[in-house]
Figure 1: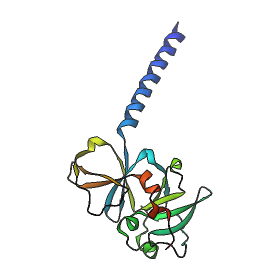
Figure 2: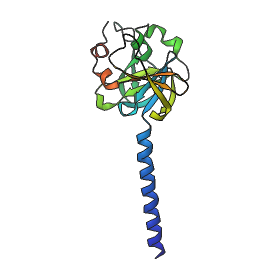
Figure 3: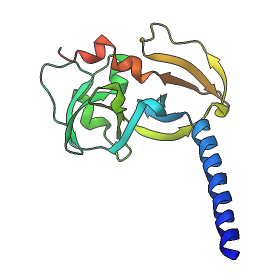
Figure 4: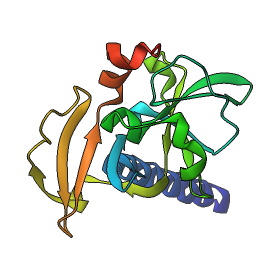
Length: 177
C-alpha cells in the first residue's frame, strides 16, 4: 500500500514539473545579446548553440562583415560579425580589437539550413515578453531581417532579429565581395 502511495506521489510531482516546464518554456522567448553596444533579441526557436570565442580563419575576397570560418564541434561554420552586418562597418579587420573574454558565437538553428554563427560581443541573458513595456518605431533603413523593436521597463530599446528571414536574405547568403 505504501508503494502505491509513493508511486502516486511521484506521478503527481512529475506532472507538476512537466506543467511548470511547459510554462517556463512558453515565457522565455529570446536570447538577449550585445554587439557594438547595440542590444538584440534572438528568438530561441531560431537560435542554436552558444560557443565561446575560438580561432577564426579569415577568408579572402569576402564582405567586410564576414569574419571568416571556425571549426565548431568538428564542422566548419561561417562567422558573421552581427554588428558589421547590421551597420555595414568594418568586420574582419577589427576582429582582434573587439575580442574579449565575453565574446561568443551563436549558431543559427540547424532547421534554417545555414552553417553560420553570429559573432556577438556578450550575452545578456534570457528575456520574455513581460520584460518589455512597449514597441518602438523601427530604425530608418532597417534591414529586412529586423523584426519588432521592443522597449524594456528601463526605457532601453531592443531590436528583435528574425533569423529565418536573415538565413534567406540574399545579402547574407552571398559573402563574396
